[in-house]
Image 1 (tube, rainbow, N blue to C red):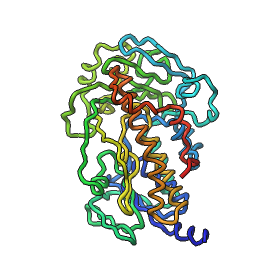
Image 2: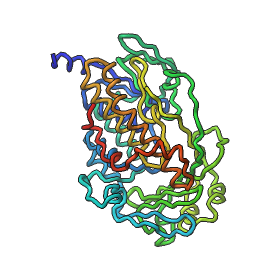
Image 3: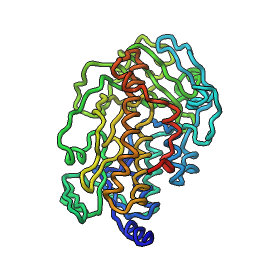
Image 4: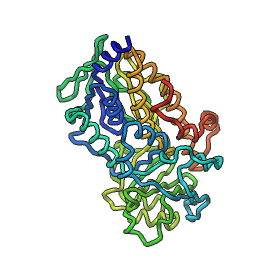
Length: 404
């Protein structure tokens, strides 16, 4: 009986809509489990924005389960020190000799899995590695220029139609198409998108371009009232990823991420410390972007029939825990395990939601709460919702072994 079930499982064709970090991670996990996978991306060529990305322990465990640890070492930067600083003065309030080790930071205990400790990457490097890995399994797995239009489904499978007229038939489909997911809209209709009160700027700063000694730690968070800055080294420590946040009442631009005029950033942070000023000064104009942060209340279900959601399409979250990419990577590993362990697609999606919705909801609320703490504007109602959040529990999670 077990052999018969495995044969059926191996014959499944999984259609993934979206070739971002979450979709590509899911593709690798599904391929390694023996599934046929096709990834459909609306862009005409693969690429990622010029920005940094942090992978905490839970995300690194996901990558380890996919056999990518050695390759990640070649593109990552593991910080050796960090600090929490005052945005106005630059004074270090809390120096960290092992940044990202939340267990040592919280209770002084040693990390039982130091090899998974968090690292920093350029998003394009991670994205490229994932895409190359998918294609190494199947050179024809990724299909570009496929903008999702609609789907139909019945008890036998799903047919997805794209705006160019192409169609693909599969046994199930997963929407991995980001915060403004059109797959989610097709499943659940128009849902409310809330501006969450932050405008952000990002840029990449060459370390050598700044005065010597400006960057004195590998990673730092600058706390201020209604404003903050996060910066960390990537690409062998030669580049600094810079992200600045300001609380605002509204967001007027229609674009999700739009080129930013540096004078806006200069004006917003003109009274901050010298280190922040130097980073802003030396951001090349072409790498400077801004965006408004939007989100939704966590969903109670992600699935309709043979179609479900993954990553930001299911649980968009603020960046103030550095867990957005990590949650989508976890999703990808877990959904593959659920399909392997189940006799039916319905059972697999039930397992997937049971394993993932509570956790991603907790992290979504925790990220909102941490953002308010970072900017000195705690809301009691949100503090109550976030009371169960625990950073050690979040980081210790292993998507390759968690019960499903």
